[in-house]
Length: 48
Image (tube, rainbow, N blue to C red; front, side, top):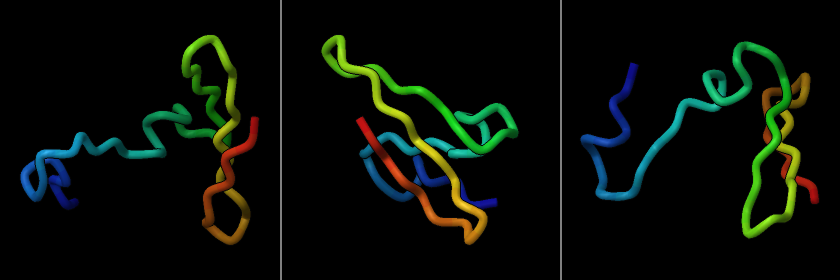
């Protein structure tokens, strides 16, 4: 596994850990809720 944090100063996160092994996570930014979803094709979709 790649340690993304060792490659850059930008924080990196494993999406599978954000989704707790599932296919969706809810993210909150300034009181707005966003849905991050992993598709069957392994792509990411972020929606408000």
